Image (cartoon, rainbow, N blue to C red; front, side, top):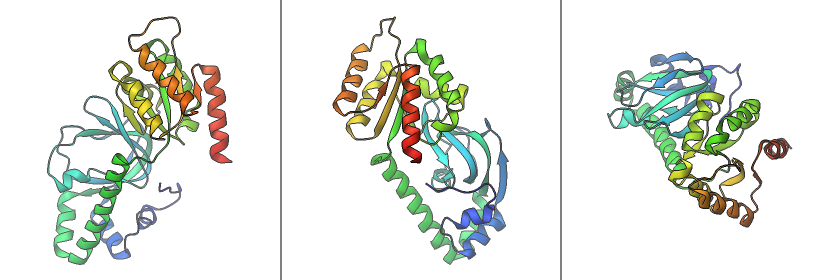
Length: 270
């Protein structure tokens, strides 16, 4: 993952991608640095936007047309590149989780540049191809390890409160959550998950279980409601069983979640 300092200039940030000085200068000659604040929607599903965005600072969240969390965009990464290659409407919303800035590169200006400068065009398309290849590998051969955040309906607000209290810590980890929980975490706690799965009754617990078997889960925080019956209780029990089988730390209430997160934080920075 690329990281940049707040004081780092946009040009220095872009240069850290490995672009030549010629390509960097050419891109900055046609692009604009745009500011955004938390909650801004940079791209909307169904719209025909005409730019590629390169995130310089902040954090963006990709949300499908059905409201499901798809991924996070961190500095330095791009968004909107598919519409540049295949002219079509945006397939997801890109929403700002934190204030920041991005480089806005309009399609028309970029195409004109690449048409008249074949050497730069070759460099650009090599770089773009490598980024797309990395994304495909990331999605098909996911090597990340997640903290799973799950909550029964009656416990979702309690989980939201927990996420608010530990917002800064959680954002240093890759997170996964079931669909409804992921949406609420973003809207009410400003916590964006890296990957979401279906809602619990629609197989979300099973999906988290599958991630456990593939080594993609480092811990599960599951705020359970012990006082009400749940139609997918068998899936919940199966998930808890997998935590035991694979020795995955599991917290089922706020008290144990506090202790688990403190342990994970200490391990991350040790």
